[in-house]
Image (cartoon, rainbow, N blue to C red; front, side, top):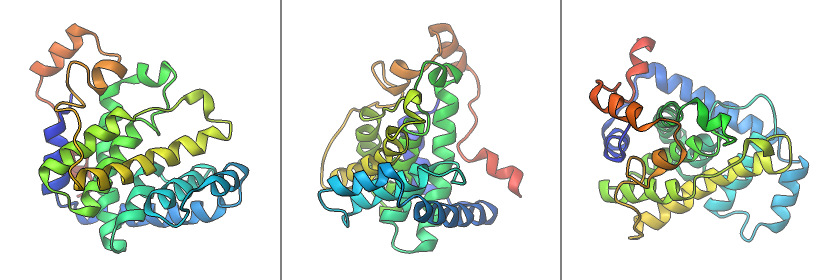
Amino acid sequence: MITTIEVVDFVRETTPPPAALDRAVAELGRFRQAARRGSDTAPVRTLKQVAVRPSSLLWTAWIDGAAAAAVRDRPAWVAVCAAANALASDDGAAAEAIAIGEVVADRIRADLGDAHSESGWSVQATAGGIGAAAAAGRALDLKVGHLHHLIGICATQAAGLAAAADTDTGPVQIGKAAANAVEAALLSRNGFTSAALPLEGRRGLFALMSSLSGAEVQAEEKAQPARLGEAWLAMG
């Protein structure tokens, strides 16, 4: 099971390989196309009507994320792409952030286990929200301490119901995960704090949302865990 500091170190220190960056560039393009196609769907029109500051970074991530999530041909992790797209200084930085964030989202989903989604959680909003936090932290080049609190702020807001998938709330909750990541990144950069162990702690994300029993957790702790980004090795 991944720890918060492992995520922080990965976000800070990892350079995605060229193949991963190429895939991330494609994901960024797919996200932007999906956001355009979904921009006039009913939930997005309503979201725009209630937006306090539609052009702000937070609302841009929320609206564009919801729009992309409202259509079928969309990226694997919409919230990750929405957060990176809102915060990155250019497309190259956005691609790096997406490559990093998607790996983190994949790992969080795996560590939460199948019963997480079987219990009714939306992994796109929960694991996707932590992946979006990683993408946001990379896009803003946050320091270690700020990254740690960014993950904690997003972990405490991780939510979303699979039951909402076919309703207006479905895309909106995915966009909200991206908006939470943007907001958390800006808060943490300005000194906002969160839990010390937001992922692996006794009252952290995994303890509350994971399907693993105590025995399974102990077995995982004894096993040699896969490193974040190990799947990139298969890309060459």
